[in-house]
Length: 171
Image 1 (cartoon, rainbow, N blue to C red):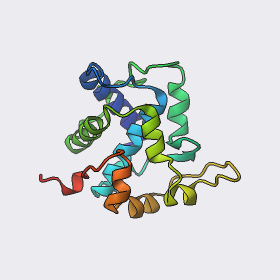
Image 2: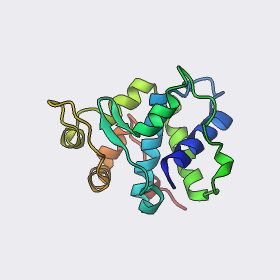
Image 3: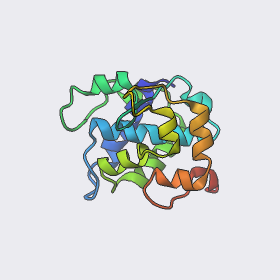
């Protein structure tokens, strides 16, 4: 799977199944980036590293961003209503679909700012990957992400609450 596929599937799922929930927030470009990073982390933690190996997030001031996708979706000034490439063009993946559903269900009532704070909260991982003093961007390192978020208390910070990874959910 590449970035286009992941982002298209998240947009499609969000807009078809979740955007009309009264407490849900509009799908902005920054929200899209944060949601896709959560799916990325969950896939890594569930041992699906091959699913996300072609996706590259970079450390930006407000958290992980996939720059090419961010740029492409900047054409939507406020709300993203459609993926640039329809999700049906990609092969269906049941496990990925379940991961996307899980992430969307756990983040629906979180604001964009809450998602930013959770992913760029200047924790040990973020300080290591993002050099604040030089304001540089770096590729998010998969091994460091895995190591950091395997710890349940670090994982919980992604959702601004005490949650449970799909790792601990029964099949």
